[in-house]
Length: 117
Ligand SMILES: [Zn+2]
Image (cartoon, rainbow, N blue to C red; front, top):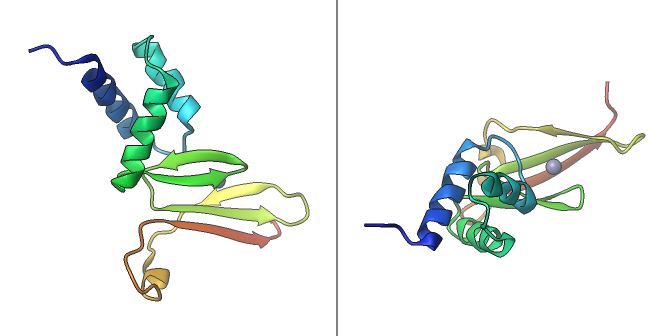
């Protein structure tokens, strides 16, 4: 049985996302998908991402005015107040905050300000 074009494209997007280890934008994912399947449209990518976010398989964040996606439940910035430069950091556990939330935590976006060493 041949897979429909839509099913094939969804499968491709899923495989590409699996290989992503950090944050990526819809445009970046689209570019990668186009290298394999030229006729994939950006609307298909946006639709796919929207569904993945709704299903909690991906999380969306705003990173420096860009919308980015990730499999990770946390997106953390450490911002140097003097220069405005940003470094990303990871949390090993979200227990410290999950314990304080009256419900299920699906993702965390943290902005920490200070001075770089
Ligand atoms: Zn970021």
